[in-house]
Image (cartoon, rainbow, N blue to C red; front, side):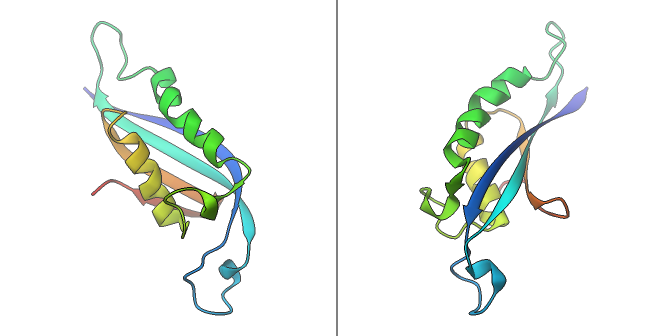
Length: 120
């Protein structure tokens, strides 16, 4: 039975988008209360009764949250142009080899704006 797990992480960070057109509001430094969703799919282990322990997801995601929380994202290696799309790809690249069954990373920078990345 294929099952989907979703784990949500939150952090605060500032950024600016250096490649937007001149005069664009996102060219200026500003901040967001980010919400990251890490989604795993897999079969339920018949002995344990779960796809994966949520603590295993936390072990991989929590260090990323600590790295990004209350930082300027542009100063983080690999995030020179930290759009939601590129932030989702960054998270994926950090987690895909460590979390079997990773199928999706969702980045929300506001309650009404989000990006869903499902890998290459």
